[in-house]
Image (cartoon, rainbow over all chains, first blue to last red; front, top):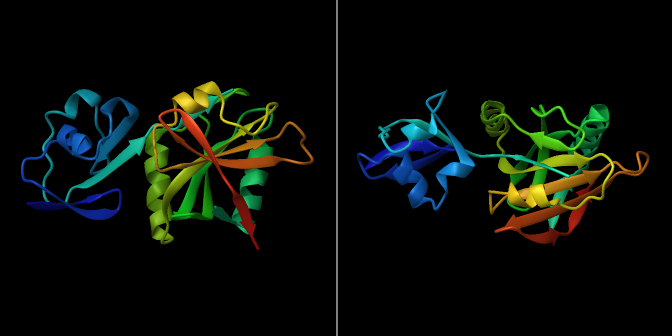
Length: 68
Length: 133
């Protein structure tokens, strides 16, 4: 297991977990969020290839918008 | 029921009033069932009828609210000329099932109307809103 910070909270994940797998575990559709990893906003195509490491700071940000 | 700190509520109304004729938007901070603070954001659309928050700004504001001991509990935006109810696009873009979606109608500039909702799978559920003095 590894421990990282997800949206400000300590979180344990299996080693070698990718960003895409994290989203799947949290039941979050990748097309409705942005993910910031250690201060860098990831491209969506990076979700499946980016593996999380101990101590990473991850922000999963739901898109916020709308209109009349 | 959602309890909304009165000072934060007033700050939100002032922010939205300043954005007219454009839609204003921001983040709601607090804890489950309670809004303790508001964090105004930039409407990237600069539009009178739509809003969009930059994820990078959203991330920065989330860090600020955590420094205050709060967490993200939802977002707010204004409807400049229409009622305080989630529009079709609001419902389609309500991706966070746990978030409070607060809509403020400024159709009557002297008497803004604020209503709070949860939106899950496009289904709107209104929450009672209490302004806590």
